[in-house]
Length: 282
Image (cartoon, helix red, strand yellow):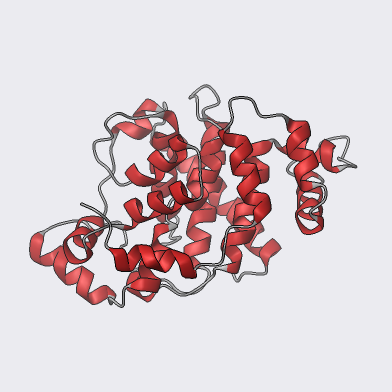
């Protein structure tokens, strides 16, 4: 089913993706990504260069020898983390309340950030699970379709909840029934318009599918990280936990309940630090 034109039209009214982010996405889409090319791209963007250096010199990345140049910082962080930082700054500029989802200002951003941090925790917990660095960015923007939904649709959460209760369906299924599309497919359309790598577009499109057919390590990671973020109370809103989750996702990553709990706790700790850095109330 095609996405309604009224929803897609709202894309033109979003602030454009920064040029530096567009170029980084283009680099990541190529077969070979040169860290030198990434560094040369951002070292002339003063705001981004400063943010990259500051992150590379933070306690999480500095190590014994803090980075002194943008090139050293890019090597320390890696391209996926740099792109995540750039897109995170962009999403910060789009902070709005999302009444349709009963999410206040900052909550939509915080959920994406928490999901990305949970992906990072998953990568640390299961380093051999094959989760690609690109999954960090996919986690950050997996719900970006909600931005367009709340800007173009004037629905209230009670309307969606009533549909869920009347038909015994999940929140995403109620979106499809009421609006002819859901936020996952809208987000995928936005990501494709921004020329994001196809595996990332696919992950955004299918993060609410159950079962995941076929699954990928990135999709399994984002699905599990999304659940971890919601499990610590970030981004619940009106949807809450009314979603289908492929139980095989965590199993394929080699995650048991204790490991999932560790990922969730680590996510909460990192999110607290991130909110403080961005001046967002904890």
